[in-house]
Each structure stands twice: as C-alpha cells, then as structure tokens.
Image (cartoon, rainbow over all chains, first blue to last red):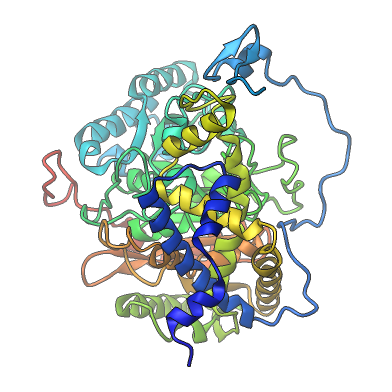
Length: 105
Length: 497
C-alpha cells in the first residue's frame, strides 16, 4: 500500500511549481497564503488523480457543449459597439482617449 | 399571506383582475427587504427607489383592459454576475466593487421588456466560485430556514431573497450547480437550462463552456415564466442555441407522467447521502410512480469522477477568463510604477482566496508539462460523462437524483476545507459537463426542518419536460408551498408570517 504521503509526493507538485504558476497567473501572494494554497492544491491534485484510473483510450476531448452541433451560420450583422467614451468610462486611468498604464519601456 | 410571499403567477392573476398593482407588490417586497435584509444579506446592491418608480410607471402605462404579460410588475432579484447598466455589477469581488457595466445582459434586457421590476443585485460566491455564498467580498448570506446555515451557492443571495420574500423570483447562474444547490438548500425550484438556451451575453464569464443563466422561483410555473422571458437565440452569443421547433420557452404545460420512465442511478446512492435526504428522495420517487412514471435503475459514472473533471476544466477556463482583471480597462487598479507590478498588486488585492486558489489550479493544469496529464485527460473524461448521460437518457425520459447529498450545512463548516466544499457539488456537475438541463424541486423537509431538493436531469432542450414534470409533481405535493419562518431585524425567528 502506498501511504498518502508517498502518493502526494508522486504528484510532484513542489514549491517551485507554485512560484512558477503564480508568475504565470500574475498573482503575487503573501508567503502565508502561498503555502496554504500550495497545501490546498496538493490535496485537490491528489483527489483528481482518480481520473488516471478512468479508461479514456479512443475517447476524444470535449472542450465545449455544442448541443445543436452547430455554431450558427449566417451573416454576422454589424451593430454599434461601445463608443470610445463608454469603453473608457470604467477605466481606472485614461489619457487623451486612451487607457493609461504605467510605463512599459 | 403578504404579496411578497406569493408566486408570480398568483400575482399575475391578481394584476389581471385589478386586485393589486405593481406598486403594491413592489412596496410589499421592499418592506420585507427593510425587515429582513440586515439579517439575511441576500443583496449586494438594492435600488428600492428605482424599483418603486418603475412600478409606478408600469401602473401608469397599462390600460385596465390590457392583459399584463407574465412578468409584468414582478419584482425580481438578479445575481451580481449578470450585467446591469443601471446597477454596479461586482461579482462579489473587490476587483469589480465599483464597476458599472456599459451595457445590460440580454437576459436583463428581456426581463425589462417583459415588464419585470429589478430590485437589485444579489450576493454570491466571488465570480461564482463556491457552493455556500461565503466566498464573497461583501459578507455572508444566511439561509432563511436557519440563519446559522448557508443558503448554498454560488447563487445563494438569489435563493435567499426569493425564499425570504425579498424578491418574487430571481436569476442565478449555474456553472457546476450554482442554481440547483441553493434552490435545494432554500426550498425553491431552480432550473439550469440546456447550455445555450439562455444568452450568456452580459453574464460575467467564469467557465464559458458551462456557464448558464437560470431562474430560481417558488414553483415550477414561476420558473417557466422567467425562462420564457429570457430564453431564445441572441445574435450576441454565438454559442446560443438556434430557435427550437418545440420552444424551450414554451409556457408551462402540466404533462402526464403516465408511460414516462425515470432513471435512478442506484449505485451512486449507496454511501454518503444524508439519511433524511435518502428517505425524502425515495418518497419523491413514490410520488412520481403514483403519477404514472416507471422508476428504473440506470447506470451512471461515479460522480466523484465528474467532480474531478469539473474542477480541472472549470478552473482552467476561469484562469483564462479572469486574466482580464488586470487593472487596465475597468475595475480595481492598485499602484505599481511598472506594468507587471501593477498587474500583480491589482490581482492580489482584487481577488479573494478561493478565486486565487482556482486561478492557480487552472493555470497549473494548463501549464506546459501538465496539460495532457490534467486538462486533456479531464476533457476526455468529460466526453465519457456526456456520452454516459446521453445513453442513459435514451432509455429513460429523466434521471432522478437528490440535488445534494445533505441539507444546508452550517456557516463556516466547509470554509477551510476546499475539497469538502467542492464535493458539495457531487450530484450537480455531470449535467454541466454534458450541457443538458436539470431542475431542482423541493421534495420535503429533514427532521431538522431543512428543505432538500429532488433533481431531475433531462435531455437536451427538454426544459418544458422537466418543468412540466415538476409542475405535475407540485400538483400533488405541498413542499413548494412552505415558507420559512420570518426572520426579524433582531435576528430572532418569530412564529411564522
């Protein structure tokens, strides 16, 4: 029998994985939250291991529900979208009709 | 009974007969909100003045001879992830605390065209991520049947509002069970329509391949009225279903259960289901059988696999959808002299812990080296689950399951155990993965006086069948007519209303 600890270690989810996905997700986390979430994720990943026992040979992936089997055909109609003012209305910072962000280069 | 505790179809008849007015109905609901909301916490934003003005203008513009449409003058609560041009739409997140959308969701537009009165925006788990409405940046919502318990989630505010008379009907959204679970916990009817039956335009995206707007109401007839108003093709949602021959939005017709087959996946019900839930479920099957339905055993994949596949897929999609909250175009922005720093600080302050957990899980399962092992595998399992349900639904008209394995749990009980919280959805996620409709109907009260729900899962586009069967069930049962004892502002429960 494989103990829980051994099984966890088989998942290979390490602290450096957490650092890596935080950086991919553009999330800065406090050290405390980082270790708590790492622990939670390990537990969830351990749980989803059960899918490895499901035989999916010859089964394709299903990425969306498309019950009608179609994305509607037909001609796209042009409609008025948001005006510049409407689009900018919720922006934290604007400058001369543009979204303003901190300096990039 | 006060107006705010009546069903929409009862109020519609009263309006038609001139026995009440939109203003009287709305005033009754607003008074209830004033009495109970400080305890319930159903809403994030309420605009009672606007609702009263709208009611007055509806009263003024209807000629006495004019028959009111089904939702005419009906006060409705809208989950706060459905965009409203006139009311901020927060998704219960600090990231959108002050966000006022520049457009209305299609469902909202259609409600307004139908004469409904929007009261406000209801509390929820942040971005729909949760099963208890405790993951909200705006405080908790209580269960009207027991204020120490959760209302379910993520559409917990919508369910609590309807159950407590703070709204007559409500819109929720269901990605993994977020309409049916709170409906079950609060003694209401909640419908998850077929994926694509209701436009997602203006529904803030969590997991786009599963998100659906659905009604929460006091009975199947009210649910059908709301669905009728909001369903149908919309050029602004390319994943919407084309118009059906037999419309998903046909008015409710009670259907005969004679000769119909209801499948029960017995093997799933052996362990882990609360004893009262099991008993009430068996009672409900007896009723369906008395109505003429044949109850048969059907095989179904272990729902624990559905939960595993669901959380991988939903979180993967969420990690992508929530990338937009970066502090640039709308919503919260936090400092930072550099762009990267601004992104990270904005997202750190904007998102709650559960959202961060989901984003990180989703990012991980999509990341290089893990995609095949997790996301691709889950997508294949999803296909199996969809086929599994489809083949079961070829042999039976509907599949019956409890909506949840337990009644409402205590506030805080599952908050520190994410996995246990995820398993709350054990019976609700499979239809979401497959895209088929499902409804939760009140099936009685536990020995502790808590409502629980009977779930019926139907074939693609069979909303009319699900609600028709529900209506037939409600013709011979009274579970849906029970109302929770009124909760006063002091937090004390009084002896009914």
